[in-house]
Length: 101
Image 1 (tube, rainbow, N blue to C red):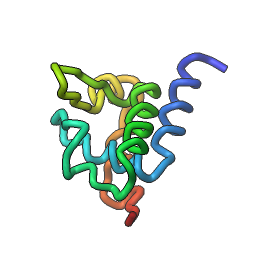
Image 2: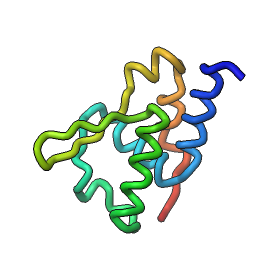
Image 3: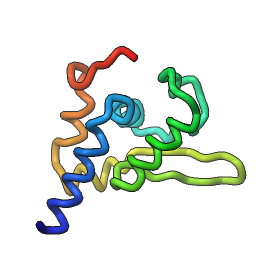
Image 4: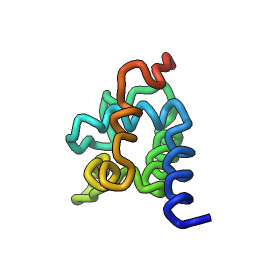
């Protein structure tokens, strides 16, 4: 399997989880978000959210910036749009992956 195929498989595997898909949808507004905040109130423990953030980062969907004690996370939208045109737009449509947790 080509490296490009593996990367797409990793991205799709990462967003297959409803919480991770909601994280991507939240980050699609283009702004960096702090790892702590009410926008991440998905009804799961902090350690579970940390796990989801790690999976997204390792799949290449997000980047985390550390400034002192503050961690911000943002979608790597430009790189993803260049590599997989239309993927993020498809994932962030309001009718895709609507899940009530």
